[in-house]
Amino acid sequence: MPGIALTMADEMHTIPEGVSPERPQRLPFVADRDVPLFRAQLTVALANHGIAMDAAQVTALVTHYHLLGEANNRFNLTRLIAPAEAVRWHYLDVLAALPCLTAPDLPDRWVDIGSGGGFPGLVLAVARPDWQFILTERRAKKAAFLRHCVAELDLGRRVQVFAGDIEPGTVRRALSSCGTDVSRETCGILARAVEDGPRRLPRLLRVSPFVSAAFWFGQEDARALASRLPPTWELRQHHPLPTGDRRAVILLTRRTN
Ligand SMILES: C[S@@+](CC[C@H](N)C(=O)[O-])C[C@H]1O[C@@H](n2cnc3c(N)ncnc32)[C@H](O)[C@@H]1O
Image (tube, rainbow, N blue to C red; front, side, top):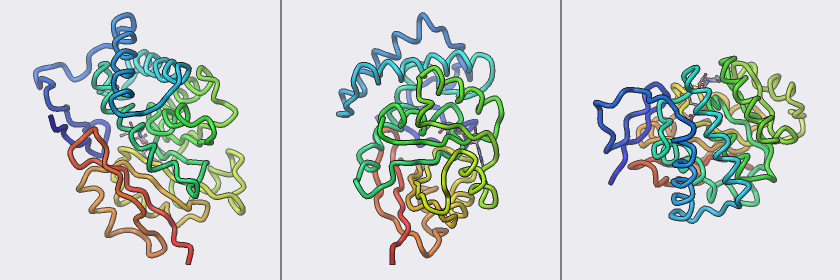
């Protein structure tokens, strides 16, 4: 059954096919009901898509979902919180990108622009214990939620949260404040469902620490991005995702010559 591609803004995430439009926009999260269902459906999805994770990693993702659900009852992090929707549209959507992110010449340090509830950065941090992440989020409540998740999941040694706006003029300062030596170190940039991404994200590519980028896009956004790429960047891979019709991770790299 083809899914409907996610659009750029969370508020606009389209309802996946098969979900009744009659349904209330946001069902309250009920931990006793939803967490066991989520664990079962996540386990099936990982097996079906050949994504290897050990028991501790699965438990960490379940814990993240639990925290997300509880926080979502207090303020809006995502509309897609019911177990089946969350597994598919959030966790599988992120984890299915792993094969294209794991080439040895790609960075092991990533900056997630607009992490929201932790997608993709926090989920990738659980999946790849050898990578480091800076999760950035302009909204204070969401940044506080991310910090809480990092503490609960014991990821503090390699995952940092920057609360603030990431723009071309501020990004180097933001990374420095998280301990990155921007004159020597390189990193990759991640973004999923960031508002107006095809227009705003290419500007960040001009900033020097960034040597790779992975953007979760539908077909239209991928097309719009292609015409805005700085000349020093090229498309390295278009990695289709199983979560939506023509949905993909667009992997970009800075040219070396
Ligand atoms: C639509 S949500 C998507 C969240 C998450 N990436 C996901 O895929 O579910 C976009 C998030 O990016 C944040 N955001 C947008 N532009 C930003 C910027 N320039 N710097 C930091 N955060 C930003 C917003 O506050 C919002 O939480």
